[in-house]
Amino acid sequence: MRAPKHSTFPLLIVLIVIAAISLPYIYAWRAGGAAYQFAGFLNNPLDGITYIAKMYQGWEGNWVYKLAYSAQPGAGAYINLFYLALGHLARVLRLPLLGVYHGTRLLGALFLLWALWHFYGAIFPTSKDERQRRAAFALATLGSGLGWLALPFGAITSDFWVSEAYPFLAAYTNPHFPISLALMLVLLTTPEKMRWQDLLVAVTAAFLLSVISPFGLVVVMIVSAAAWLLRWILTHSANWRAALRLLAIGISGAPLLLYYLWVARTNPVIAAWNAQNINPAPPLWDFLIAFAPVFIFTMIGVVMNAKMQKSKPAISSFASMQPRSFGLLSSWAVLGIVLIYLPIGFQRRFIFGLWIPWAGLAAWGLEQLAQRGKRTYRFWMRWLFGLAIPTNILVIAIAFFGVQTHEPRFYLTLDEVQALTWIEANTTPDALILASPEMGAFIPAYTGRRVIYGHPYETVNAAAEQFAVEQFYAGELGEEFLAARGVDVIVYGPREQTLGLLPLTQSATQQFGDVLLWEIQP
Image (cartoon, rainbow, N blue to C red):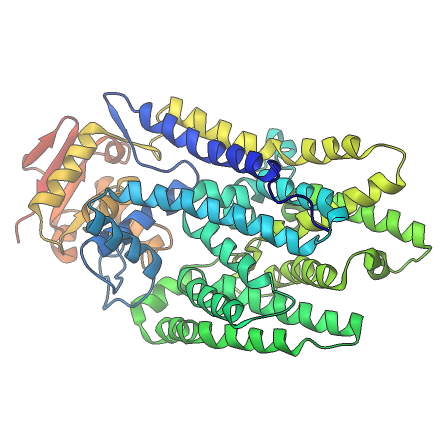
């Protein structure tokens, strides 16, 4: 039997997580004072601001996304539909883009927490498993790796920045990570007796996942197929309903996946952008540190269980787990590692949610250790969480330090905000703005205007474009460069001043404090 449904434990964890991913943003917003405006992002702000640029295009009424950070955006394509839809929603509700962004992020976090609790309920389905379910849920939502031990040595390991792997970081960073992880868990939590309502939920979730995170759907398909096969081997019986469900999931998600592949091959601008969007896996030493707590407790559990059963093969050590739990957790945990080290350019995309199965295995290992070791369950639980929580605390602490120092990636000066407001109101929608690489990241999000360079992936031919911008502000390129590129406005503020003196003889046409603007006439 399952423990009482009205347990306060998951609610307590939910409150802790929501507070931890909300209060830093509230503090950052209030800390801007009279001289700064918070840009809206504390973790990976360079990517975060690009999501607002995508929402801006939706707010303008577009469903075809054009590269916002490239001087030549091309014809566009039906990609980034999730953020375009959020932009449409902001326009309809007459809400600020950042408000819709963070509101969706918090709703996504709640969805993820709900999905995690039910996922581990399916993995540990009986009342005697309740302790493992709670440990897995708390570890998945609050835990991370041992990067806090490597930080004093100058190493910034994956558990500080690969947000898609960890539920806490995912919910702290953006909306699409927690929603994607939740949809993955919905798809992986297969009912034992599938009804047509369950099939409808699965098909809908698969389609939405293909819209928001196509790589997440690929992971689900691979893991589900492997778990189905492994369960067949262990039980000598095939669940053909689950196989048909998997086929339905594939069919519902396939059209968009095929469309993305087609666009990446036939649209020259999207193809150029995709070619430089390389996501290599972290080095093996980095990966081991970033997942060390769950690896350690899983392996200890395997050893303890094997000794009790006098069985050496590791796979038999999981015999105490139900076939369904063993098949799903082990397939995701092992295949996730295999996939991220395949010799392909987008390895890290497969790390999506990998902490989740390992947290489940670590909770199982904790139980084995408590039952067969000399120490109590509470003793070993303190060790596990003592190792796994500090990195996330440090992530928040680092953000607080950036807020207190008004880190330029976190904040715009009010002069810069006024300049951006003027650009939005006084230039045409297809205007090209020349700014420093740092300022170029903000311009498409705040004005909808294009820049020559603004992002290492979103800008086509990023390295060459960044070099050209830096050369101009260093005085190595003259006004011929402006004419050749069709620049409409030049921005020259504190960020640009660090690159050099502006090579122009005429006076600025607009000034907002220490930010100067030059309007370039054809």
